[in-house]
Length: 336
Image 1: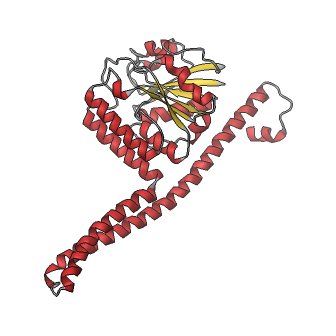
Image 2: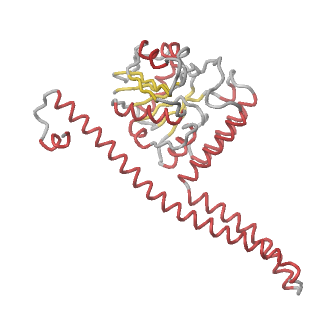
């Protein structure tokens, strides 16, 4: 059983060593622990620091592509390196590396596909009162939309099984955290939370410049992810709301018309008819989006099978390199 701990980094040369030191190298139930650093276009020599500190795998973006892209690059690299379990943590030292054994335990026991580290937002001493309220509100929204039982939706401290990692496809350019949970809920993955310790971070977040910016970008990410994986419900709900609102002025016009006073209230009929028509069109868009979503599921299934085939090819290649004579001719042809 191989565990790879991935660390997305952007100009983290100063904080990365202490983060690496806090990560345990031996974990019960894990045969091998490896480290992977994703250097997201750093200009301070983060990749070189990672290599000096003995990181097993270092991948680098030529330019800064954002946290979500770095996360997906890490997942792909971990899968290619043969990870059975992947843990994602931050380079700023916010998450307690000593909690990794507890984080991976539900995956090891087959009780979860994804485990989210719960920072205890309501009582975390490093969170201000405004941040606590916003985090709790955001988590409640994501919990409702994703139908997952999580306590800290934006925590990036996560353990992911190999199969779950193969099925996750992050499309947002901001943050993977909420998108991933909504996907997991839609794909019927088992998601659990475990309490984890946190440390004080001295530098401001590089993911966002202000709380309002963070809120607005998270709202867009949540809305996009929910609409992507629940298009029929999202569009039909909006369509019905428009149709109901539009029906009110139409009924108003009919009331006056029935009482012989319809000539002076044509504006109500025009406005109401427009809203009802828009509601019907929006609902039809939901049906079309749902059909497109069905096609996306087929594509994701094909991608999952391709990744499984890659795993088989890697296994065959290793057996060939070890001189295993039991390898059949068919895998040899695939290898070619």
